[in-house]
Length: 299
Image 1 (cartoon, rainbow, N blue to C red):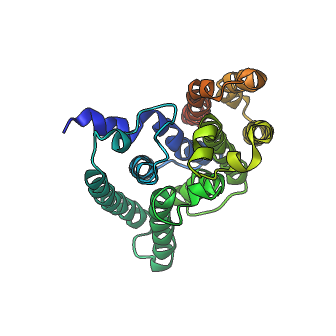
Image 2: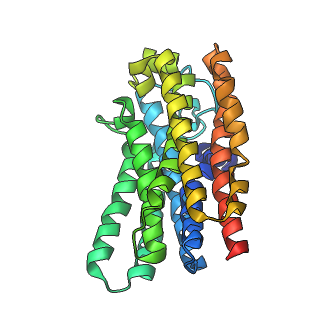
């Protein structure tokens, strides 16, 4: 079996977005003048990377089982195309889930040591994240087919990703993580919404009831604008709180997001939205990464 098929199934272009919540959380640690643990940063990024690949494998497998990939636009799916068998993908999901949980446990024990109460809480969060990644498209009650995908993405790419990782870094909560969670969470929802607008016709035919299918394209575009507007406003809140205007540089990638919003209504053919997915994903990653670099340089 060719390794390139597994690389395609991992959908590398989705990975920068998954890193964004950890990178932004790290920058918030720096903004609050707290020393950043590079060990925790590395372990958190590794866990997030593995979790995203589990999600992508499960998505490939689940959509193929339900026949939702037959006429879709965008990247070729490996199980649907027959390049990876259903059995092979199922085994890969199980093995990678175990590896993800193992790395996550090492991260949790590295932070909390013998604090059983906090270890238990984060263990539940970790297991829930793995289950959520798989159940998005897999199983009879796959929530991605019942319009709950946006909520799940906001929770795990926003609330858990930013607030949870900030707690791992500092063992404390801080209100600034709320706009942080809104920034990455809503940006991630924007990417999902674009993806679902692109796949609208195919999802409608295959009874994949995404939020876009329920709302229709016109309302989905308004929803998309609201998501990104609130996300940009959240990042601006963080910059104003920092009282260090070097952080304004971190907003530079949002130029491409604003340009995307200006031209959104010009996309009458939803298939053309595929090229815009990376615009939002890389912009979110860029803002988070630049914010962290600034924090490292000025603290």
